[in-house]
Amino acid sequence: MASTEATPAHTGKFILNNGKVMPAIGLGTFRIRNGDVVMKVMDWALNAGYRMFDTAAVYGNESHLKIALKTLLPKYGLEREDIFITTKLSPSDHGTKEIVEHAYKKSLENLGLDYVDLYLIHFPGTAGIPSNHINNKHIRNETWKALAELYKEGRIKAIGVSNFTVVHLEQLMANNYGVIPAVNQVEWHPYYQPQDVLIYCKKNNILLQAYCSFGGTSSVNMSMMQDPGVNKIAKTLNVSCAQVLLAWALQQGIAVIPKSTSQARINENISINFTIPNEDMKVLNALGSRKIKYAWDPTEVA
Image 1 (cartoon, rainbow, N blue to C red):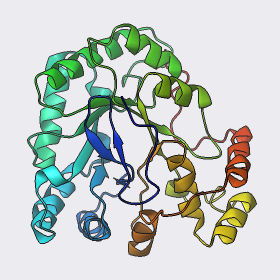
Image 2 (image 1 turned 60 degrees about the vertical axis):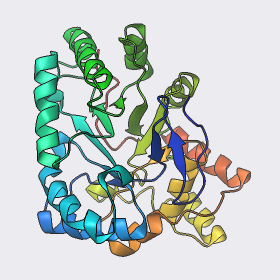
Image 3 (image 1 turned 45 degrees about the vertical axis):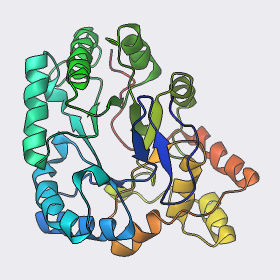
Image 4 (image 1 turned 90 degrees about the vertical axis):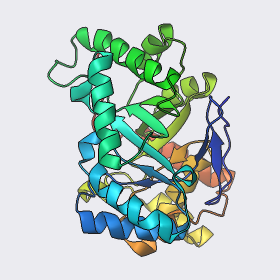
C-alpha cells in the first residue's frame, strides 16, 4: 500500500504499492539538455542530498545523466542502489512488447544502467494518432501489458503512468495484467489541482507525483510564483514561495520533482522542514478555482 504521508524534510520517503521506497523530493531535469549544465546540476543536487532523479526519453538528456552518474556517484561514495532513477516511455514508442522493450533498452543504454527504478508511460496518447481516436485506448492497453511483463521479469523495479486522467486510469485498472501502477505523475499545483485524480489514486494505492509545482516557470511564466496569496504565506512563514508550493503538495501526500539549474534553489527546494498551517492550506487550495494549466493536456485523449 502506498504511504499517504511524507516527512516534511529532505529525508521524507514514500512506500510504493509494491513495497519499493521512493524519496518524496526528487530533481526534475525537463529542458536541461546541455551536458555541462546536467553535470553541474547533478553535482549540486547530490551534494544537497537529492537521491531521486527524473528524466524521460523525450527530454534528450539521458546520455548526459549517464556521464554525470558515472562521474559523481563515486565522488559522493554512492552506489547505484543509493539512488532512484525515473525515466519515461515516449508516446512514439507505444505498442507491442517488442517496441516497448526496444525503447526501454535504449533508455538503459543511454543512462548506462541495468534497470530503472520507475518507468512511466509518459502520455496516454500515442504519437501520430488523433487524440480522440479509439486506437489510443487499444494501444495504451497493449503498452501497459508490455510494461507489466518487463516488470514481472524483474527488469524494472516499478512501473507507472504520467498524465493519466481518471478515465485513463479506470481503463487501465479494468485490464491491468496483474500490476497496478505505482505512480501517476501529473501536473499539480495550486492553480491546477484535479481532485478526482488525487482521490482515485489514493483510493487505489497509486502515488501521485507532481510536476510543474511552480506553475509555468519552465516557460518563464511566473504568475503563480508571484501570486499575492502564495507570497503572503511565504513571508509569514519566513520561507520562499517555491518552498511553500512544494510543502503544499507534500502535506497532501504528493511527491514532488522540482527542477532548477540554480545551486541556491536546488538547495532550497530540498530544505522543506516546516508545516503550512491549515488556514493557509485552505488559501492555497482555493486557488484551484483558477484552473490554469501550463503543460500538455491529456483530457481529450480517448
